[in-house]
Image (cartoon, rainbow, N blue to C red; front, side, top):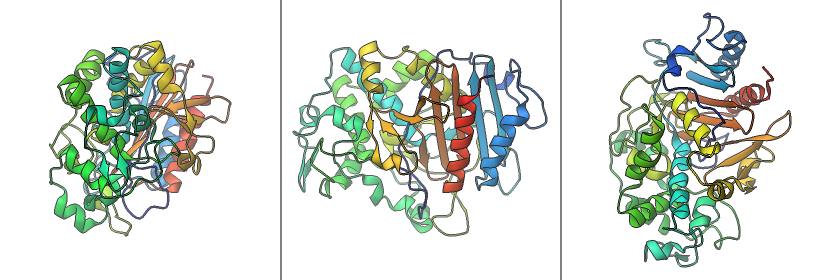
Length: 398
């Protein structure tokens, strides 16, 4: 949920989102067009699966217990896996594994907000106080000076409540609080105990509090929860059959890999069970690599937003925190942009919650998309291997 720190001392909860491509594969393609190590070329693909398999293996070798990768090209879709789903049993990662997508959730929430803007029910220039009077206040926080756009863009200056969550700080904190239920108001109240990082609009600092507030605004504008609106406006219409918003359900239902965290130590803890209310609209969605690829394909292909709102989402500013690890990275409205070694770049919004890391990437106009899910805390070596896979796959000509 926060901007990822590669030398972190606990499980990453990072921000990021993804983007989609021009043509989405049919829902049934997840299994039919998948290839695993030793199975040869995927259906509809002219390239041996072993190339992508080697790239996935490199992420596992870098330290991720389990890895699942789906690459979509104009020629079809290919999915490979590496490592194990369960370190106790050695079972392979399911090719249709569900996982917590973390801050890729923000792309879904931002899409709903921008749809409401397009419908004339909300404005990017609206102050937070118009919809949530008295919620952002105290210790120098002032909702009358912060706009909806600044929440979307992480330029609000509001403190990130995730820094204060005991469940992600230590193994003991996780064990004690993994089933605790949080309300959005409680999460925002945690942030309001701190002074702003900077005056609104004068800097950039990733804060999960921004998107919890956006979820609350969606509720105020529509009379429905953000989860209801995402389901009705995105998940249902796109047929994302394996994408769910779990609410307060702490389990990942269906095939999945176990999530692990060392909390900065050496002994991994199984952190698969976690009440997602602690991340709410900032990162609680569960999905699959296939569903995420279809969502971002539809999003960047103009199926979910009118041209003006999509252009606003894709208008980016320098993201200093991201650029520490990805030089040239930029951030828009629930969407980030990263350069490619072959020229141009891709949109994406990676995400992380305890035990799971997600990297989503789409190169506009090429028909190529990559979604990578890995288990564990993430590390510099894992991220470098993931970056290399994404760059090579998006830069391929075949």
